Amino acid sequence: MKFPLMDRFIWYLNERWSIHRKRLKSLPPPWTDDPVLQRYRFCQVRREDDRVTRWIHDNWVQPHADDPDLWHAMCVARIFNLPTTLDAVGWPEPWGRRGARVLVAARALHGTRAIYTAAYNTCNGCPRGTPLINYQKLRLDTLWTNRAALQPSEHDTLRAVYERLKTQLGMGTFMSNQVVADLKHGSVLRAASDWHTFAASGSGSLRGMNRLCGRPVKQRQREDAWHDELLTLRKTLVPSLPKSLRDLDAQNLEHGLCEFDKWMRAGDEGRKLTRPFKPTLEDYK
Image 1 (cartoon, rainbow, N blue to C red):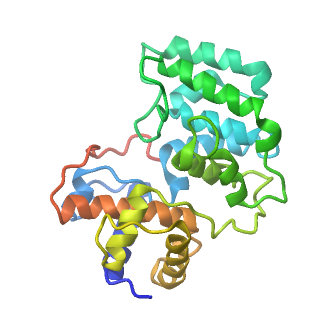
Image 2: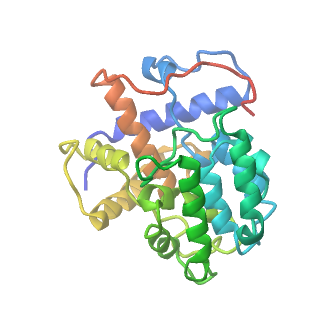
Image 3: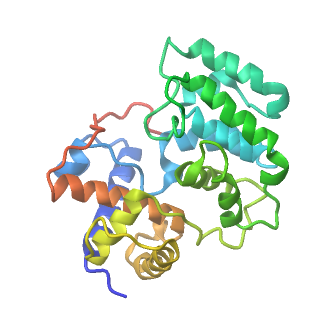
């Protein structure tokens, strides 16, 4: 299997990683000569280095790694996906006892500041005319009601947890994939057999893979075929990455394909992206 644009993908990953490393060292901007990376916001090569994910892992995942309800807390974390909101509402489990308090705190914030970011499908499936925060309560209540069928066990694979979550109200493939990416850092799924190899495609990573393979950008592909290509790509790619990235798992690689698609849309096609980047060192670490 050949990847005609492999050199460009490797360059993108290495350059984005280099930007991250320079910012950690508090070097002044610009951190790259690439005009697209200078102008627009791109996620980290490793999802765990993103600011919101760092907060979630430091404040919720690590202190509660053994909590059997961590899976539900990660749903809360990605529905109310701003650290200021999550800090205000506090650890939400068990939801049956604490859920009402969480929603009261979220409603108190609502109207005074943003309580969501645009990075997640916070309104996925919300009926027109329904207040979004009411819909979030319904989603989280429904997940909690169905917890006996959803709660992961140490015998689960990541894919099995993902397949169960994506059937739930307002979850779908994107949000379920994100929740599993957080949840696998907890105790229950840390030894899952597919920890390094599980990933689910999204529209961006499908386009990114098509670009990498020299296919029409919008060409459809079966999920199993896409995943086989992803694992082949991972095996081929890893030796070309810095040592600190050679443990890159399949979910982070899927994430990288999505960002690669964005980078090419802006650079090769001159498309305007929605999230401009404003260089700052404030609170980076």
